[in-house]
Image (cartoon, rainbow, N blue to C red; front, top):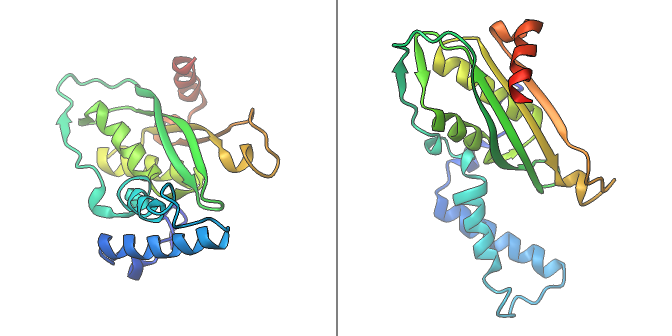
Length: 202
């Protein structure tokens, strides 16, 4: 398996969303019962179903390929050939090691070739790859490589800064630290282009 691919059980992912929700609800109820929670309580009895719906339809929807946003490209009729930067894209993901949230900002830049992409589509691509159990390093590379393929250019940069609740709420319990990862392709491998990009982020 390519290291940039999310590890996916191809047999399970093909199961219908309805069956996924039923299976998740059943097993989550077992977890709640093991924790000693009263599943007959009015506040708790629907929790397994709520969690199952949230997992499949929302926070892990990026595991379903048909949910990938449709991307329309436009001709670069203005012949713009400088850095185009969409910064501070808020995203929410989940750490695949502990299944607790990753909350961060993504900054995505590219130098247009013959095509440009609608700005909101950059946000949608970030959120699609974030909507699955993740590690930040993989997420950064998935966004970068997907944009390289879509825009047919190597000149892509992705910078992600995120807080990991597996660090904040358990283990070391450090609420102040954050993690930064980068993807620099094409022209962005040059130090001067990196410095130019970083100057726009300040």
